[in-house]
Length: 274
Image (tube, rainbow, N blue to C red; front, side):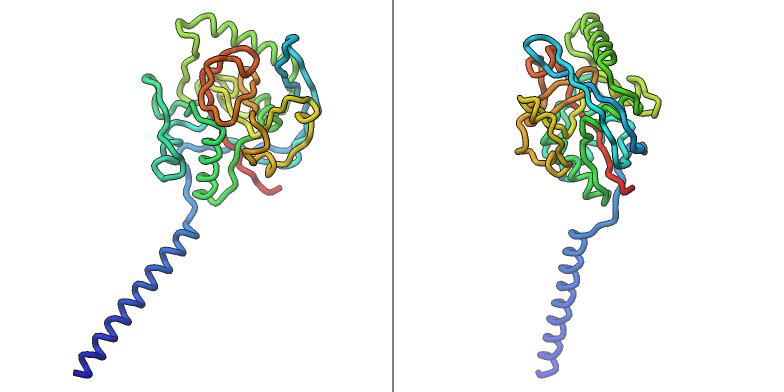
């Protein structure tokens, strides 16, 4: 009888030890997992440098411009293409993003994901950072402008040329909204980065305030990550606009420079040590 009791105790202890090992392994796995790569994500190295950034500020009196010298102090990487529908859905399927990509009938998985809010982009970059064991985020407007024109000055003339091209594009299609295309088909710059002034407008980290004084204040990345910092975030593309951070589609055109925004998407920056 005693031997049976001893055997039962040993079995219970053994099962308890196995359960403890499984529990601890599960806890460790939740804390640490090997880094994963996001299929199709190509990152391009960007070196520090200086350039002149001109920004268009909406005004009831017409187009108002402000120029400033920007110093990019730290190297970083930026995605060669905008984040695609397939890449977004990988985040959704993994539980990192709250909803599946919203597709139009003609769109495929290799089109840029659109109709995403600024808050949505933060979910994606948080998930991507966790999965890859790296630090991903949106670009600031200063970083976006630096990359878009390959380190050259972003001038008033460049902005007005982009506005003219957009107005011409709007007058040609039957629809007032420009269709998206497969990533990599809307042109590339001298740094082989694609689609920065294509049909998709891109979210940035940068806030837009109602006063010039607030807009000109320098702010750290950690400050810009705070969704409570401002009500509007800057979007960039073939025009500049400011959009409420919770908005995922803007068809009225009332929020920016007067042209309707048919797509809101994004690309990502990876922080690197110098």
